[in-house]
View 1 (cartoon, rainbow, N blue to C red):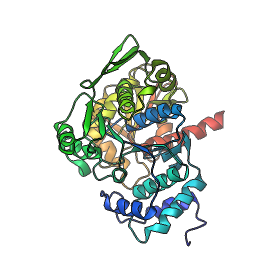
View 2 (cartoon, rainbow, N blue to C red):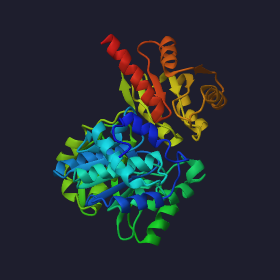
View 3 (tube, rainbow, N blue to C red):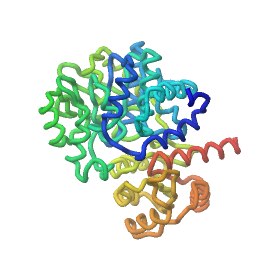
View 4 (tube, rainbow, N blue to C red):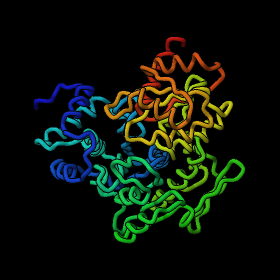
Length: 425
C-alpha cells in the first residue's frame, strides 16, 4: 500500500488535499464508503447535534455510559491540541498508531472518492470503534445534521441540544432554517431529545413527518434548580438532590437534563439513580470550556452569540466578575458583533488576534469589527504570544484575562500558557 509509513501529522496534511472543498455537505460519499468498508457498527449509536453544548453533552453521556461496563466510543470535533482528542474509547484518546492504521484502511477502500477532512476522520473513528468492539458510540455532528457525515450512520437515539444562529452561510439565516437542518438527525420510530425549552416549529414538524418519538425539555421531561441542587422528572421517575455538574455555566444543568432523557430513551434508565449521576457529573472536566489556566486566564471556545452569553455568565462568577482584557480570535463566517456585544459589558480592553486557519479573520479586520461593535479601540496582536504578553502587561496579576472566539484561538493559547508554566514550574 503506497501510503504505509506516513506519520499522523503527514496523514492529516494529506487529508486536506483530498477534497476541493473544506466543507462539502452531503451523505453520498460517506454512504458509499460505509458500503465498501462493511464495518460492524456499534449496537447503540447516539447522535448529538445542536448549536451549543454538544461537547459537554457528549462528555456527560460518555461518562455515564461507561459505568455500565459497556465499551463506549465517542467522536467529537474539532480538537484543541491533538487530532487524537476526536476519537476516544472508554475515555482514552486513540493513539497515533491506531488512527494511522484506520486511515490506511479507509484509503485502501477510497478509490478516488473525494472525502473531506471531516468525512475521512469520521470513517476512521468508525473503523477504530469496529476494531475495538465498541458497544455504544456517541457521535457529535460536525455541521448542521441533515447532510453531515455523521448522519450517514443510523442512530438509535438523537439529541439536539438547542438551536441558535451559527454557521449561517451553510445552514440558513434564521433559527427555523437552522433547526430544519439539525432536525435531519431524527429517524422514524426512534427517540429524539430536544434539550431546550425554546422549541422551533421545524423540530416538531420534522418529528411528525418522519414519525420520530420526540421528547422536549420542560415539556415531556422537566428540571428545576433550587439552593445549589437540581431535580429532574420524567413520567413517574423523579430525581431530587442532584448536584450541579462540575462543568462551568448555568447551561450545564440543561445539558445534564437532556443527557438523562437520552439515557432514559435509549434504554439505560437503570443509570438514573441520584448517587450514580452525582458521582459522574460532578467529576467531569472538558478543556476549553470556561477553563481557568494559571490562576488568571480563562479560555473558552465560544464562537457564537448564544455561547458568548453563557460565557459571560461564567466569567461573572469568577474572581472580580470581569475580564481586564479579552483576547479574541474568530473564523470569518462568525457573528463578531453578536459575540462582542455579549462580552463587552464585562471587558475592560480588547485585543484581536489572527488564528491558524484559512477561514480566520485577519487581526486587523477583526479589530475593526470589534471597535465598530463596542465604540472602543481594539489592540491588534500579530500573534497569540504577543496578545498574551500585551494582556499581561496592561492588567494586574489578580485580574482575569479572557481568551475566546474559536477552538483555534483556545488551542493556540493553551500551548503558549502550558509552555510558560513549564518554564516557571
